Image 1 (cartoon, rainbow, N blue to C red):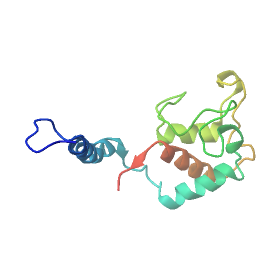
Image 2 (cartoon, rainbow, N blue to C red):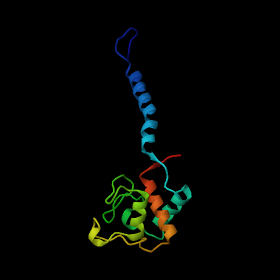
Image 3 (cartoon, rainbow, N blue to C red):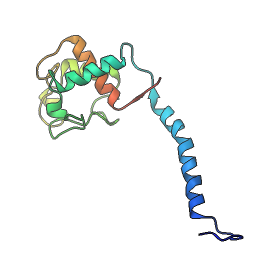
Image 4 (cartoon, rainbow, N blue to C red):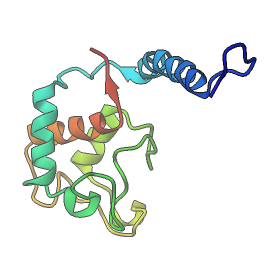
Length: 139
């Protein structure tokens, strides 16, 4: 504890200064990662995609209920993509056309439009949901 007239800063005071700097830096870091949503990607489309991901498309069987991956399918929540850069269009193409066995990291194919094929609108919703997992959208 610092005494009156001491030249050593209080550990509590130093901690507060460090915390203040970190809090002030957070908006700048978050702002760098924000990007606008692709056309047609809204909160309601993303929500529907989340339901289809775990429901009729059965994406969760290989990618996990939290989309963090399993031994059968990669993590979809980070910014590491096996093919491309994870743009919405690239994700939509993968959902629509799947991955053949020869191209699959696990040796298991990813079926077109999910295990139980879904409509084009639902495929687009799943792509929107997967796209949103690794991004902060601009307001």
